[in-house]
Amino acid sequence: MFGVIIIFLFVIIIFYKQINLTYNNNVIIEKTINSSSTADISEPKFAINNESKKIYITASQGNFISKDEVLLNKNVKFKSSDFSIETEKVIFNRDKQTAKSKTKSMFKSKNATITSDGFNIHDKGNKIIFYGNSYLILK
Image (cartoon, rainbow, N blue to C red; front, side, top):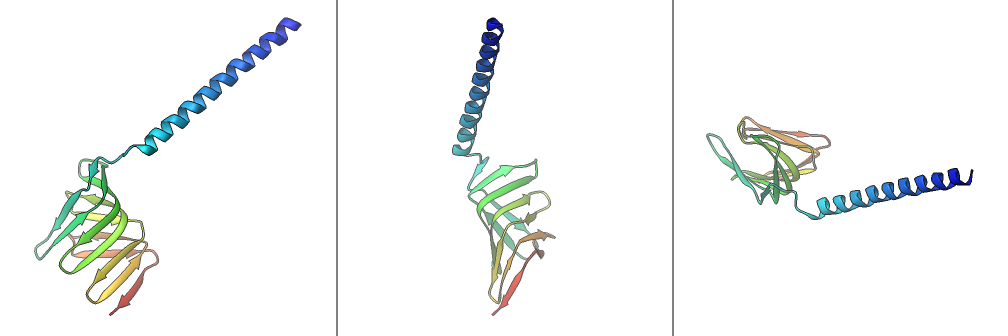
């Protein structure tokens, strides 16, 4: 009987050490992932071209989602001669020249300011749709 108790305690200690080792390795891996930069592109720059204007797009970081789509992160800015839009995350499609965001955004032009919960730019920048709670201030 004493031998069975010793073996049982030994098995418990082995499982405890294995679980503790796995937990510590996961913590180390998470810290490494969080501390290293996960951006595919540093300070990406793109443009949406249409017949009448260019919209320049900049961000602090970018990650490729697919061949044509790029996730732009941190300090994303759209600038044209008519307006600017600022937000934190945008999915930009380089082939279709579209952009969409589900993060707080601020649109500024000479005569208006719009804050919204997101936007969708399509038709090569000719159409912008604002989503969610949106506020319009006319000057």
